[in-house]
Image (cartoon, rainbow, N blue to C red; front, top):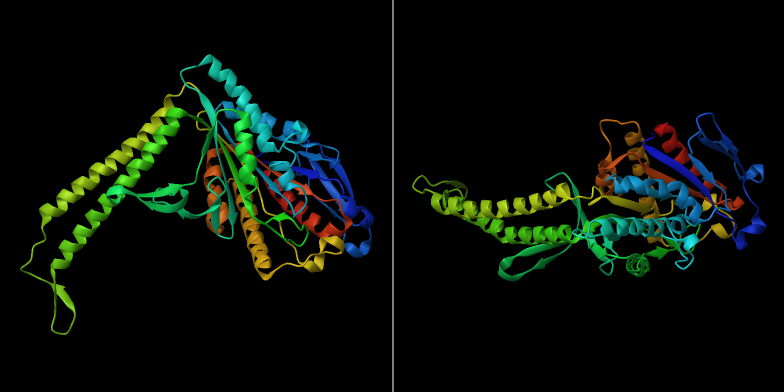
Length: 442
């Protein structure tokens, strides 16, 4: 099984693109059940013909609806999720090529055009309903989070777009944290990104539609209402005991903060008393002073007790996951709607060429940096290399845990393509990107 599955999807021409003509493209199947794509511009002055290596599992023509893409790409992963395997799906392509339509969707009333994430949550809820009927002691639902990455920050779309920080913790894992809250008795809570627990499909759909409306948009060199951020949607199978245990962990962590600070302050205070000024203005140890070791040990003991409470809370979460009668508890499906890859105005013509502000051009450069880093991570992951460059960008840092927690063969990239003749350069670059990832996976 390939480490990363690669699919391609052509969108139809829009009304404004018909007069500019269409890219010529063809599809060839090889003996290994993979497909290659050959494209050439409408006229030779617009670029050179190009052919990919056999890298694509399926290539969807413009007639395919979201329903067909879902059945081929996502539906086969639902049984894996119910067995406890996490899966991830990425949509890559230039602005206006159909990424958001594929992952999130626009027509929420047409069941055949639901985005992949909503179609997946609907099928998951159907499966969880059957599980809940058989095991009424543990009701399973779906917890979802949705955040966007812009430049080097994350923005929590379930918390009014609040800016969050991406940090690597002492456990080596990357955490997304919101603003710090000062509670009673000096307790400090760093708010995690919000996860909304839902127990039915309609509730999740309403919450998701509202959150999607908070995504940032701006002019791109191709699409005048392009999403200028990477959107990351996580669906996790949860239970109320798991939710409660995580909230208890946040409480224990907030209680530890003032105790840990007090322990540090007392230690510094006692050690500083052992220093005296020298005649030349420097510092030296005071041979007549002995730190109050009893005071230091007392506060360190208190700190250890609070640390133990945090450990107990973490162990409780692990215990709930390990003892669950449903192997799918805690399993995730991650959908990533990548920002549009930007290309210079010199590569565009007709309606595809648009003026950008300097800030949007800077964002475009950052997006390209992120996407290049993601490509290198995917290639290293596909080749099972010892070192995978997750720290190359904020995007790949955030996705690190998803790669590490996703089984091989459970990661998928869908490259979305425009057949418009005046977007030949952008379409060619998208195909090259996906072809490199797919070739590394074979």
